[in-house]
Length: 152
Length: 106
Image (cartoon, rainbow over all chains, first blue to last red; front, side):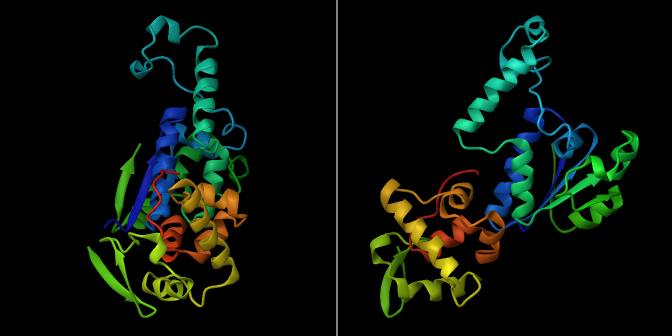
């Protein structure tokens, strides 16, 4: 039985973020300890001005079965995002901002990567209130010790 | 099929400890089940709100609610649910309420 998972979210796209949130939330629902560690573009999921505007990547995403040129048309990403948002709502999935808040309420840890905060010139105040801490890679490994690490 | 004795009655459970037949469950079995799986006892009124909701949903829909649904419909917040049932509210509440484990990802 898995007792702890630490999930790294490194991508800032809709399809990059959702699966990690589902896995973290699902872990808590099974009684598994869970930590979410946001890094690089994944930080958008915990950025106050950005977490409500996470988009589906329509370029370089063969799973959409769209011609590459079509994916690059103006508005393609917004349109596809609207569609996906509607689909997840139908399944009663929360939106990304609400989902992160809900995961925090389950007792999971929500952490931001110090290197990324510095790299992108962010402040603590740019990030959501539920954030437990801004930590180093070393801190992350300490926290993840004895459990499984998942990188997304 | 596994059996166990709760409150003086023998009931059938699966290998994870969930009831096979929800009709075999009685309220006086819940405290014992709770204790076995690490749910804080004595059970509070709020525990009972959740347990009763689990059962009514199961008998109405054929499956217990997921944590997301449980939180939205029972009026108990996610935070409180995890205090009441620390090792997974839907799973632990289903076990204590004598219904099968709910299926769902959220």
